[in-house]
Image (cartoon, rainbow, N blue to C red):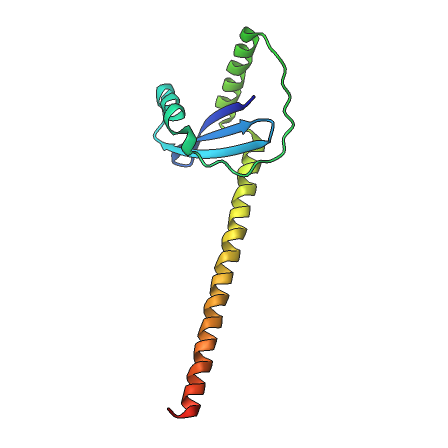
Length: 140
């Protein structure tokens, strides 16, 4: 069973949707920027057409608790949660922490790749200079 929660919030100048996916394997978060405030139908169409294109982060272990609820009670709780989100205008802190962790991981990977590339470039330039010195010394 997979649980998906979408939180739409206003961040700086744009409306952003946070997609949280919880299943047996773990917890994942993806972010999508809408720009202008999306209507319910726009969000629904996006989920139907572009959900597969979302890039979720690495799975994080998460304990999934499944409890059956009366549909009317569930609907009331969803409504309460929506009101709470409207009042605070912030997504769940777990999702924010997860997104920050993923950002840090990507930063570290990018920095490592960049430094490795720079070192490789320095090494190749050093070898070229050595060969040039050898050719000069030979005199040919």
